[in-house]
Amino acid sequence: MIGIQEFIQYTKGQSILEGFEPQDLERLAALAKEVHFKRDQIVFREGETHGRFYLIMDGSVVLEITAGGHPMLLQTLHGGEAMGWSSLVDSEGGAHFQARVISPVRALSFDGPSLRSTCESDPAFGYRMMKALLTLVTERLDASRMQLVDMYSNPGVARA
Amino acid sequence: MTVIAEPELLDSTALADPFRPQLARIASVTRETSDTVTISTELPATGSLPQFVPGQFSMLYAYGAGEVPISISGDPGNPDRLDYTIRSVGAVTTALITRKVGDYVAMRGPFGTSWPMEAAAGEDVLLVAGGIGLAPLRPVIYHILRHRSEYGRLVILYGARSPKELLFRKELSGWSKSPDTQVLTTVDYGEPSWRGYVGVVTKLFNFVSLRPERTITMMCGPEIMMRFGIRGLQGRKFPDDRIYLSMERNMKCAVGFCGHCQMGPYFICKDGPVFTYGQMRHWMGDLREL
Ligand SMILES: Cc1cc2nc3c(=O)[nH]c(=O)nc-3n(C[C@H](O)[C@H](O)[C@H](O)COP(=O)(O)OP(=O)(O)OC[C@H]3O[C@@H](n4cnc5c(N)ncnc54)[C@H](O)[C@@H]3O)c2cc1C
Ligand code: FES
Image 1 (cartoon, rainbow over the protein chains, first blue to last red):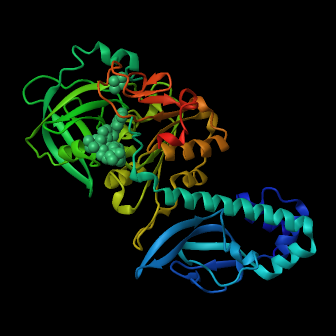
Image 2: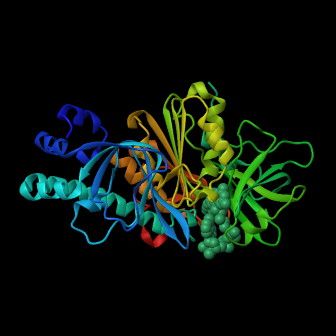
Image 3: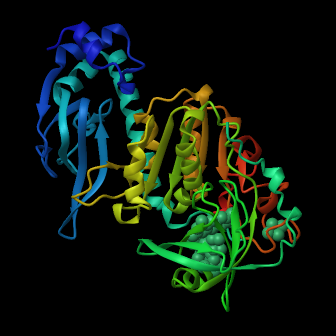
């Protein structure tokens, strides 16, 4: 648990919390735990059910996957971003990617099942939480689509 | 204050004979990536190369292959060289990138409008580039760094598919050490040794603090990237008329005669390639054009 003033200060640049009411922040602060990860530390592994949701305050993490025997970096996450959102939905199976620290991370960590049951017991809070989550997932989906489009393969000359 | 010539002062139709190519000698060839090369050209004898402003392009002719528009990627402050960074995608560009030092290349131009160097004076400048799109913006960077006190903050956001496909890597690192300059580079897919950002270039907007009303944005890259970029800037309240884009269309004459490069009411060769997003708003985003 973290004091509310501290929580507000820690989460200043977190766009995911923008639509939240003061009482929502109090609920979140009550569930939050400050955690630190060292460079190259694995936050969670592919396939692992880690069950935690993180708001990164400082530092960077890379999401990676092993393809054809080689690790491939898919996305980096930095201060002000969230990680581990799948722990907030009742999903089967573990993480799809491995999260590895590339520069020392200070983050707020939330137990996924506890956060989920808070959402269930207070639907108004739950709605705002899921709305924030959906915004996050939409951003990630858009970014993945842009990567899939392979934007740089054609520098943009439309054949007239 | 150094004033860069207005686009109209270099109106391509006013060139002595815009259809007459000039021969230039390749003085150096630099391999940038597996498919991209920078050639630096000079005039064979005494004489001077045509003056250019950042954003302009030349029509480069490879004998037996054809002629293509290529932006000038060199330093506008060095009148003895014209540099071109060329990515091989087809017959002409492949012929051009296999030229060697001492070979000749025929060129027409420079043609087209410039990046808004005057409008940007005193303002912060945000450059957003994707892939080969960094090449047409490189003269802007040279110009600003040469006249550093005339501009505010310089922020360069650059995205490429992978670390191997990043252009001008050494220069990027040098530029990041210049005063009041921030360079952020991202790749779509990284290798384990890559320590930079991984993700689309528009995500980099989150990591710079910019004042939309005091910033001139210049963007160059594939049209689809620019569309996503514009959406990201609009979400951050950047005014449309302070966002400049370099547009690309297939070209033939390059001087507004043949209509080959028409986009809505504009001829990209003559009215562009640099436009404000305000001008292009109605003509971009047509998926049939991709
Ligand atoms: C104003 C302007 C400035 C430009 N500046 C540069 C520059 O600085 N450097 C540079 O490398 N290019 C630049 N281009 C693009 C360049 O002109 C084209 O890549 C070139 O015309 C392709 O000719 P080609 O004969 O090699 O290929 P083509 O035979 O015409 O095309 C071969 C194949 O590649 C595809 N193709 C064509 N163009 C591209 C492309 N650009 N990217 C990917 N696939 C393509 C075609 O659809 C075709 O299937 C610029 C274009 C314009 C209009
Ligand atoms: S290329 Fe002929 S009008 Fe533009």
